[in-house]
Length: 490
Image 1 (cartoon, rainbow, N blue to C red):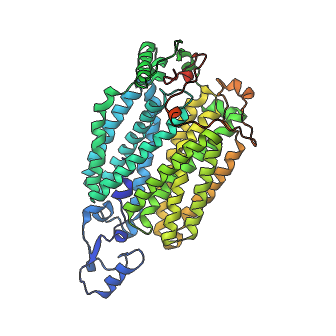
Image 2 (cartoon, rainbow, N blue to C red):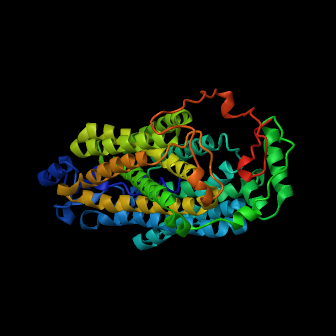
Image 3 (cartoon, rainbow, N blue to C red):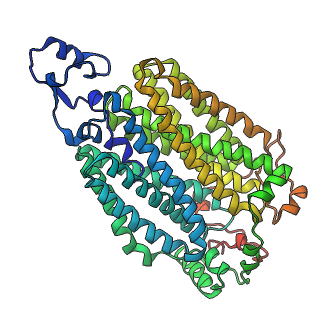
């Protein structure tokens, strides 16, 4: 919700009709209200006035006309904070644990959100949004780790994609709040309240077994996994858990990947795809505010389309694998961007909404596919880099949106996002299919890693039933590594 408030606190006041003519009979002013964009920039300041300054930061602090670029600067600053938040999480999560990082991040997100709602001036607000970005990124990564790390390898990919639905739910709640309380301060305040309350629910969460094992707290890890298995009406196999302390010590950094030709190719392509997917997703979402139709309806429909896209991706992934799913998602959103650039009005809105169908799936699956492409000893560094690059891509989206203030460059962002996304989608076909492939333990094993699904001939696995999404009856023969821990196995 801390991310999605940007769609509503900075509504363009002219387009939303937050102004009126001082003299109702002023023909020049009335014609400006009926013009495309409903802009009053060419009018004298004394012939028009705001009807309600508190509906948007743009109307409250006059971020219009020559100052309109400051609206997009605020959003770029938020994502700059997210880059810092990802870095902080990578540095502190291994020392403090996922639960403590989640609690601290939630408190920081709540406090910065409450302070943002009371910001006295624009620059104060932008600084507080940077703090919100730091907290939001760290909170998201910590929550995702707590949700995915206890899940066994069989359904870990599905758990990662399924977590997207909770993000979408947060977006829909934000839309509802903004619709019912059309005040940017109220929206910011109400979006921050759940963050303040969230630490009260932390005692009901289990710490990540992966982290507990890495710091030598094996008994707590077993107890947590046993409790999760009991909640799923099953039990843990009577096999010992592996000690991941040594595995953690053997973790390698980005330099090792950059020296390895195969890893370098996979890493660089997936970093480009992650940045592209994130940039296009937030760019398409922010652009809906300036298109035909009510902004609240556009965003609500957009989140609904995202849920459909993630649901389809979840099903397709089980049959075609991550590479095909991500590639077609990125190609779809790239095509939608080009169509947005070539159309206008209601048709442009349709293509922008269609683009969110593929963008949400691409953002949710890109890092999962990256993890499948790499050996276990470099995954941590690669995923941290992908998270940072993804936020950098998101930061570029509002920067490009500044060009929309120029009538002659309104379509430039779409002409940038379209070919970029299509190029990223085509690059994915240079990577191997990971469907049915095992993850090598180390970089030295990469030369012998093979996939059971060939590049042109895909092995179609058995379609999972609904009950199989939550329970897996195939027992593993060994639990010698942490990645083989599956509390849902009987």
